[in-house]
Length: 170
Length: 202
Picture 1 (cartoon, chains in turn orange, blue):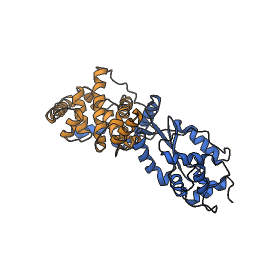
Picture 2: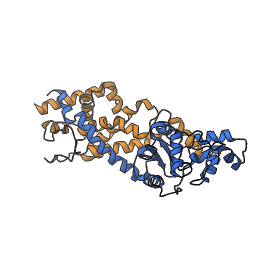
Picture 3: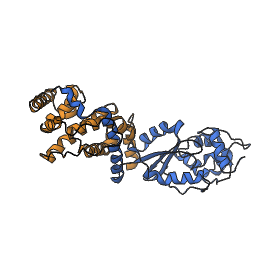
Picture 4: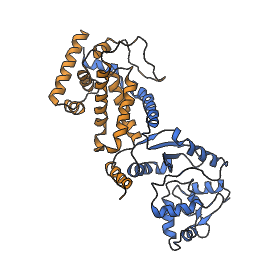
């Protein structure tokens, strides 16, 4: 059997039940964007979104478990968000100019909301865990899976992050 | 602070609207980086919405949007790649040639064909079919003879029925023995419209 035929047979096996990427993108884009716009901030959300889905597209033919694609993409987005903060270090505060928005944005978040500064002050893993818990309402077991840690660590990250937020906002 | 306050930083409706623009930008980058294996787009035509799929090898499918789009997508994912994205630019050439055909500005197609959705026997049938020109007709039996399988008219019919690239590979030009317009995967009214456009029937 030639290499190409072997490759096609392999793709065929792992593609069983997998939707075309377009469908996967449509099903998950709003949730991923929502996560990233808090986890990396509204100014960098577009870029992190593109990086997340580009990573997903590269790996897509090899993905197993088509019923868990929604968790898979959030796990990638979580890694991007954590790497983003490591790479960026302490970023300059955003300017008062709100980022460019699509014309029909139904209810844009207010960039001057003091909550942003508090969220930005959290360490990356706490920040990501807090967003999964309090923005997307994910259960701890799932947050642990998304972040590749134990459930106990996920709880601790959410707890510490929330506590810190309360102190910062008080 | 109530933890629910965090939700106001990313309202669901707003995220949905803004992610559309981000998704479009993502698709452009995916094309630039060569990560889109199959680009798909839809276009209007006198025989209804058409769904067009293009790979780096050429045109892989034309489908009647309402009837066979999902079925074709499933085959593309299984047999070619799940990296399928809606993207206009890679399908420009195919859509332009189809539009010219429907405007009677083109009688044959210059598009490259990706035959990965076509089996061996079907390919021999469809290749013979491609030689039936604009305004001409052939019967199932004639195609069977031309591929040196004179008793295989029925199998020829099945191969034509599963043509993944109708219009461009002109299976609509193949008719029954008495010249009757039997069978077309897209439905007989579509076959009639195409043959009328080519002046083959009144």
